[in-house]
Length: 248
Image (cartoon, rainbow, N blue to C red; front, side, top):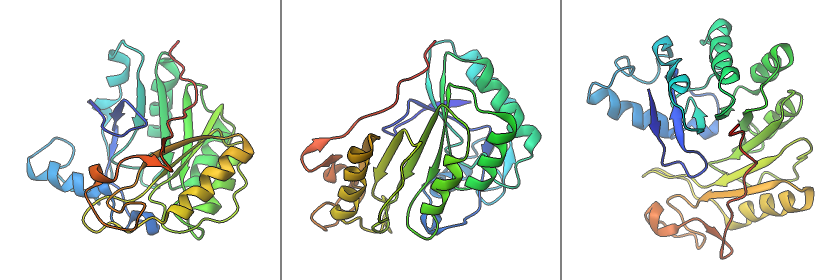
């Protein structure tokens, strides 16, 4: 099962794995955990055991194969493909589906950068698969960048969301695309505009595509509003830069 996504930088989500466990500061108010509770409450298939139980769903593997129009897929928006409870044999199956459908472009995002890098060095990454890591702060997020840089791939990206502090000076060599966003939800932590500007400036200086996803529930003026009210503009501009899609 794939679903149309409201995430600004993708078109559809594909979740052959569901469930996850928290490993860093960015996980504290996980949107997927909140969504999984809602899906469990309505009896949605795959969420019967809640969010903290990691489950592989082989019956979903062929969903992209059956979809003919070229599509930009976010893989495992409700989990992490490189979670240590996901068998490597199943990761192989997911990558085989992606490799066999070059008309689609796939975005694989993880907080388990070390496992991603080991897997990519061992097995390679198809050109229609973008691989990325989350970078929410200096302690947990920034070290993941080096793991990503060591992974052979045509397209590498960073999801700097939720941006929880100034991440300082970044080495963006080998990085093609950076997404920045604030946190949403009733417990959202604010993002300082200076933190977002710092990342945007370094992308410009190092020739990296920049995408500003959202302010979240705190605006650039430091006031809390609805996510929609705060909008997506940084310094009066909508930043929608993205790598080229496979679509072959």
